[in-house]
Image: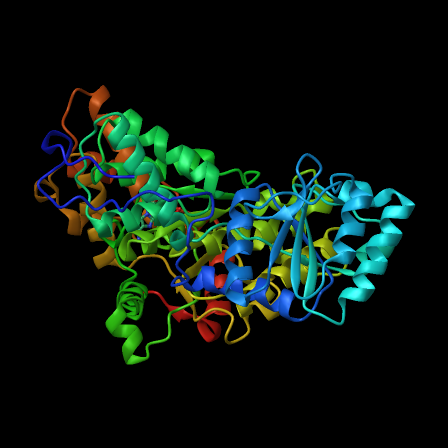
Length: 528
Ligand SMILES: Nc1ncnc2c1ncn2[C@@H]1O[C@H](COP(=O)(O)OP(=O)(O)O)[C@@H](O)[C@H]1O
Ligand SMILES: [Mg+2]
């Protein structure tokens, strides 16, 4: 498909779009590691002579492309069957009298040598005794050659005797490398049909594909098409539009929520040691760092006193590294569908992997996993299985997902979660020192559009001994109300009044905070 060279429709930059896909089965580059791994799994299933392979997916086209490429690579002939078209090679004529399921199996039996037979929506016929018997006989005969029957459908329920002969293939969500050809195709098509300008280079288009990861291919391309049409051009702004649209389109049952990066460490006062730690590890993410042999970090657990910036710091990691931010709602794991909890967690973790590079933020992790430690709890069994799922994932996951967990009370977390090697580091966030309190006043005054130079922040810092960051922010908000009602400007004196009127948690819950500190002393690294 030739691209338009009309200067009106193109920017100064060379047009980055490659020609569209031709035919129904485009060549797929196997450069991407995720894609390569997917295809390797499929190759392995075929090469290890699994007579029946089941594939449950709504992404029929994508699987067909992958199977076609794999068959070609293995040099094995590929046959297709559907009830409407009968049995035949891709692009070839169907064999005579092969559209009925049982006849199709009879035909398959007569075809000699290596072969893959893709049967669409066939599983539903397997409840029939004659068909299931024939299928099992075939499967038996298949074991001696590289012959596989692939059953493809959106949902597959096989009778147990057939299921015993079959191996499932899981088609994960497409990686950015897999999405790229489709992305280029859609861009070329939409910009040509609607004469839209293009100002995005090759790197930008690669990023576009990355931003769509997490969605099935068709949906990803639909989202892209819609965003381009709404924007009426292809430029850097499209990257954000697509991210935003993806967040809306992702269906994760509310368990995993992709979020806007809303903070970096410029929004955080203090926590210098945590900050340095995160800053240093940024280089592990660069190509130079990887070549040097830096091991990508896996995650931190941030614990400590309430209101001192644990959640804020966890979110800030995403901003600092330019990663996506996704929040796993630990509490939602226990929503009504209890039986589904483990499945949901697995799905959410899987999705997180697809979104990489991503900061996976689990706020107040004890909410989901605390009772795994106590056997008396009614939830303990489920909680233990959820914990096991998480720990296995933490152990096995590939790079690209950084886990930033926070906990208000790590003493109730099961010890296996805290064992060395699970998290790279456990940080303890304490009440801010005077210098940090001064910084907190400056920062939050500035956030409310006030010039900190007009305030005596040192005096405020001294007066707010024992205050958390959240309480300092609160004092400023309350001060704004007071000043407004008195028709004054906000001043140091108004703020001092608010401070004196506040009982900080460190006073009202002194015992609890002392206990947390004692616990952390030997087990965690001070964040400040
Ligand atoms: N160290 C800090 N630097 C900047 N703001 C802070 C800090 N600590 C607390 N805050 C303010 O208080 C709010 C609540 O803090 P949060 O991170 O939710 O505390 P935690 O998770 O430790 O309970 C933050 O959104 C921020 O506005
Ligand atoms: Mg918090």
